[in-house]
Length: 73
Image (tube, rainbow, N blue to C red; front, top):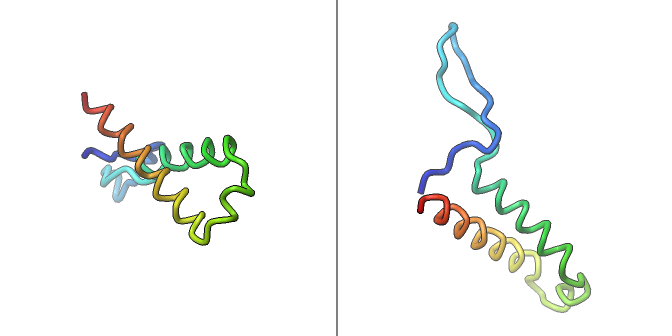
């Protein structure tokens, strides 16, 4: 899966472009998915589960992975 920087910033050395750095597109998509999940669910429901933070994080990356696969089609 191609995972480019979401907001590429060029990194140069001796006037030569070495690479682009920054948050990856997958991480950006996961962060946005997490924002949506947190907004659309009552936080009290999550607090009942011991591992609610991990559950939301895993789900966010699952959504991001699906979005990354969709980009390749």
